[in-house]
Length: 197
Image (cartoon, one colour):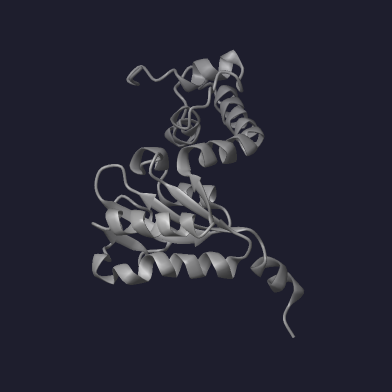
């Protein structure tokens, strides 16, 4: 008899995804119940290394459907298999899901899915909505980092790189950081004198 928790998990909303790199025709094709967490697990500055305007998510109602669509997208392109870029976090896994030189056949396959009535989402607006849904947690976490540095007497130093990397996702997705954070945090966050802009 199946575990009810596994049955519930199998029927949860899930996505097949195509994450194209920004600098070359190299992409990751996979599936995930949380594409935002998935892309963020691959690189700390995921919004720089992936082309947010070419990311496509195919929404499904069950994990098995997303897995099936991922294989449908990836299997015919075996000759395009490639290792992941060296900058990706190897511990994030998915090393067999990378393709090089496959943008045209993938675009055709995605158009076919759209024609069949599948729900496709453009990457940047979907990721922006996902980030907004997590904004409260991000704000609490970043303010806690700020408080820790202030308590340690480091309030005039720039935000640590890991905070900056996480918070830079907001403007990358077209979201205003200043609307969500108090002025003292914004001064701390932007206090890196070597920072551009």
